[in-house]
Amino acid sequence: MRYITIIIISILTIQYSHSQINELGVYVGGSNFIGDIGATNYISPNQLAFGAVYRWNRSSRHSYRATLIFTDLEGDDLKSDDPRRTQRGDDFTNKIIEASVGMELTFFDFDLHSGEKLSTPYLYSGITVANYDDYYFQNGVQTSENGSSWAFGIPMAIGFKTTFIDNFVLSVEVGARYTFTDAIDGNLPNNPNHLANRFGNINNNDWYVFSGIILTYTFGQNPCYCVN
Image (cartoon, rainbow, N blue to C red; front, side, top):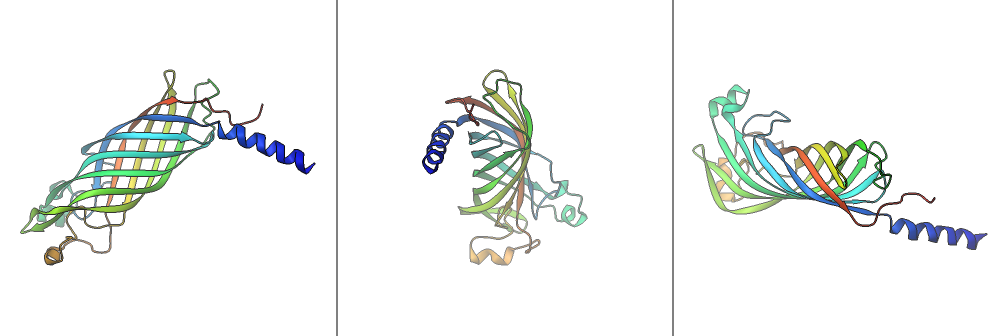
């Protein structure tokens, strides 16, 4: 009986190991920044964001995912509802490149092998790393430190995806990024000589949000998530 059990598990493992399907596509949307400069609206895209997305569907309920997104983060005190920020009147822009890896969990089965029209909400989280330029503010003017830094973060995204025209999957997603830095907007200069120019809330790190669509093309061996 033990040997039969081992054989069955081996068969299931072999079948499952060949059950993945790949998705590769593009991300297009917008970004907005939440920090010490500008408005603090959670979802208010004001700059273009674009990039590439790869999914590896491990089962009908979860997939591993990697993304690479480019954007300019922007903050403008004159667009804030806070009268103190409006009076200060600072603004900044910062180019970032973000790489993210993590897991996507669907609310319902999303079995691309079924041949049926599929739709489901989903959640995504993992870890991000973003490269950004170093700045500080001198007399209210954004000033470059002629360098760049890396910031780790945690992505928290919710989306809705559906099968779309043959082998394509279309997703709509909103995702916030909590970063482990307070320096993207120049609030925390990288150069110690510029720390006297620090401003804002020293207890809050920077956030930014991506809102957009993902269009992926599925390829590879069709998935089979169960034994017929």
